[in-house]
Image (cartoon, rainbow, N blue to C red; front, side, top):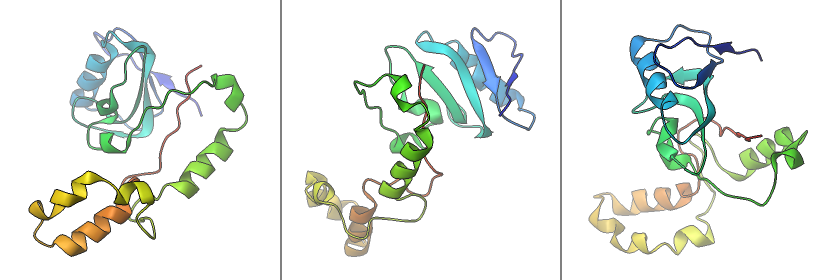
Length: 164
């Protein structure tokens, strides 16, 4: 899929965009600010569904060097992010990303889906002991929350980004 290199005044790194709509001044300012991060690796990528977030655009991909910043996906979906360092180089995934994505989608409930039962790790979380103090409708919410632990909630399908 072709991308455009955006011309954003004051940007310190390239901003590559797959968006098919004009970006607002606020969105351009946000991208400029992200392009100035000292830990930025190469460029900022803006996906087709990108829109204004808090601090960063939701739907942007911000690869970093020696840093992990979950909030760079726009804060509101940072809770569904996890950075995992593996011993693998990106070349091992050549030709296998589609299969990997399908495996992830089968394993992690997305949207309004949840696990059929709370998993063993989720049910052992110590936070459930004080859950009653947080919510009035304790039983309904606790059961639902336990089944949603380890899901991507009401968001969109996960993105897989591999740095080369």
